[in-house]
Length: 375
Image (tube, rainbow, N blue to C red; front, side, top):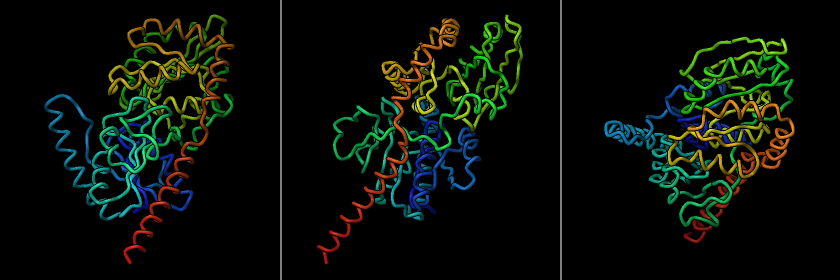
C-alpha cells in the first residue's frame, strides 16, 4: 500500500489530476494509491495506467431526489467503513482529495485517524465536498483569486490544475497522424465530458451535413455509453471530401486537442486546463446542470482572459453560425492561441509535489521538536 492515498474518482475531471499528481510523486520515490469510483468512466482511464494501484470505493453521486438521497447516505456509510479499514491498513503519509463523492469518506477517515488531509479544488466555484472538508484540511489548493469562506494565508496555495504528462501540445500534423485522421482541412473537435455529452452529440448529428457542406471535418467524442462509433464522409463544394468521426472515448486527449482548429466543449475545470495546456481555441457551452452552476464561472473567467467564446446552452441554435465564422478566421484563432499560451501555468502537478514534500518535511520537524520537548 502506498505512502499517499489520492481520492480522485467519479469523473474524468477528478481522476485526471489525481493521476497527474501521482505521476510526479511516484517519480520522487513515493507510492500512490488512487481511490476511484466503480463507474465505467473511471475504469476506462484506469486501464491505461496498469502500473498504478487503483482502489474502488463504494459510493454514488449526491442527489436531491429523496429516494436517491437515502441511497447516497447508505453508500457513504459503506464508504466510510471501507475507508477507515483502508487508512488503518495503509497508514499513509497524507490523503489527497480532489472533491466529489469519492472524497468525503476517505477524507473523514483520515481526520478520525489523524492523517494529514490535502484538498484540491479545480473549479472557480468550490464544490460542496471541498467547502465542507476545508475546515479539516492541512493544505488547500484553490484556483488563483478564489477563497473558501475566511480561509487564506498559510493554509492555501494556488498552483494551478495538474495535467497528466501525456497531455501536451504537439504539431497538428503529428496529432492527426497519431489519431489516424488523414484530412488536411479544418477540424472541429466536440466533446461533452462524462455528464454533458448528450446535447452536444445531438447538435453534431443535426448539423452534420451542414458542417460537411462548409468543408468542416468533425471528430466527436460521444462519451461512454452515449453514442456509437462511426465515420461519415461528405463532399465539400470545392470537390474535396470531409469526414465526421464518432468515438465514445479517447485516452489520447493531447493528440485530440492538438489536432483541432477549434473545439466545442463543456466548461469543466479539467477540460479548460487541457485546452489551455494544448493552446486550443474553443467555444465553451457550460453544462447547465453542473452543481452550483460552476461551469459558467469557469467559462466566463476564461472568456475574460481572451481564451474562448462562451455560448449558453439555450442558444445552441446559434452554434453552427458561431463555428462557421470562427473556424475560418485564422487571425482570431491565432489570437486565442496566443492568449492561451500566456495562461498556460506549466507543470502545476510538479509544483504540488514540491509543496507536498515541503509540507511533510515541516510536519516531521514539528513532531520531532515536540518529542524532544517531551523527553
